[in-house]
Image 1 (cartoon, rainbow, N blue to C red):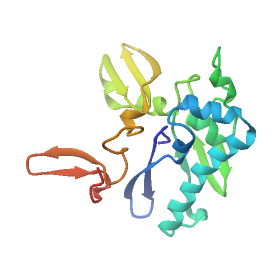
Image 2 (image 1 turned 60 degrees about the vertical axis):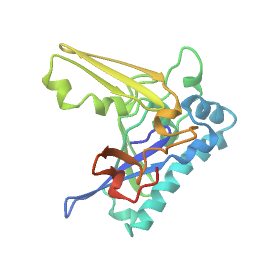
Image 3 (image 1 turned 30 degrees about the vertical axis):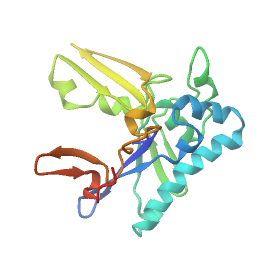
Image 4 (image 1 turned 90 degrees about the horizontal axis):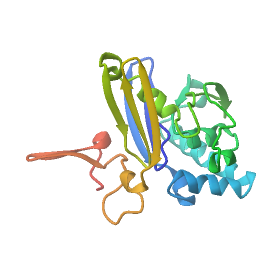
Length: 212
């Protein structure tokens, strides 16, 4: 789940069916806290877009190495994110997403081999309705209920509304505070972040020691 401020990964061992969930800060935040900042950064030169792409790939490589997972053993990495995040990682230009009429140069929904690892990119619906919204539209409640509203409130927010047999989607810039960016207290939703509190104690993401 390639988010603007954080990256969430599910590592699945297909031999043992063991699942490990990991949350880290998106290293691209050093170039800007929202998708418009990333687009403007890419507009300054092709090498900048390549730099943003390399940041994500380096994090994935580091993650695999830290768990002694050789690249050749990775069956696939399925990637979902907003249109800007996916397009940057796939290596396509995002300049057209930064000005009217806001159109994509690539629609996702295809495979790429990157660093000997097969990547599948979830399809993009439009300039700002990306693969993450496609995955969210598969939520069981959207299939079982006649009317349902799903809200993903992050740096880039998506709202999905099912009305009968129709699904409507919209997105907006909600600000990095919802994912822990540019705030004086708290932290992003990464391993160790407290996500539940009750009278007897609390729970952290990844069951790691609390960091905020």
